[in-house]
Amino acid sequence: MTERTTRKTILITGASTGIGQATALLLGEGGWNVALAARSRDKLLSLTSQIGTKRALAIPTDVADWQSQETMVQKTLERFGTIDAVFANAGFSKGSSFLGGPDQPDEWRQMVLVNVYGAAATARLTLPELVKSRGHFLITGSVVGRVTSIRNLYSATKWAVTGMAQAIRNEMAGTGVRVTLVQPGVVDTPFWESIPKPGTPELQPEDIARAVQYALLQPAHVDVNEIIIRPTGQPH
Image (cartoon, rainbow, N blue to C red):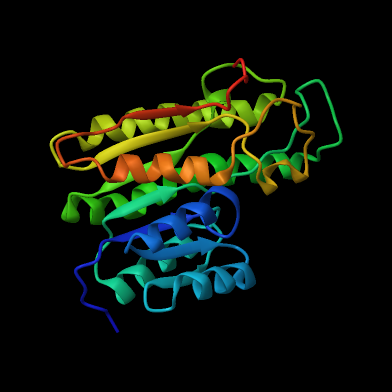
């Protein structure tokens, strides 16, 4: 059953940990309805309990699967009636170079599917709703989507996200939809569980969540196109 409410609704992918989780908690505290999408049902249910079941909805989702994302959007609309903002945040890294490493080809394939196809599918399935609400599309890129990185293929996926955000912004011109590319530096999240940390200073997920909130809270005529956030001391 759809809940008719004056609260705005945001759909967040990659919501179960890290930046997505921190953003969901911050916006939930700020009065938003939050639709939480990620693969881990248990983590989503725990997060839903923290935010409150009246304002949060857990939707187990594989962003690399089109039908799974279709269901994600449908369930969000069934519960909240509208989508006012989307944070396409799902992504992960496998760290070997093109020369070689322990990664298997299927791991690279999955990274490209999640980081590039998954983000594109999120955009394609939610932008029609954002046009209706004159809403806001936010997407997580990376500072390595602006410079090259030893994690070459991951960096390439984030270059793709940088281009995708620009293309979406161009297409949305005249619709009232705002588009924000969020490009973090090193952030202390589970992202680093499968690859070595670079040994530089770190941001916290809450730092990125506040940046997302900042973009969302601007008046409708202000479109924050890009936010680049590095920890103090990270050179590039």
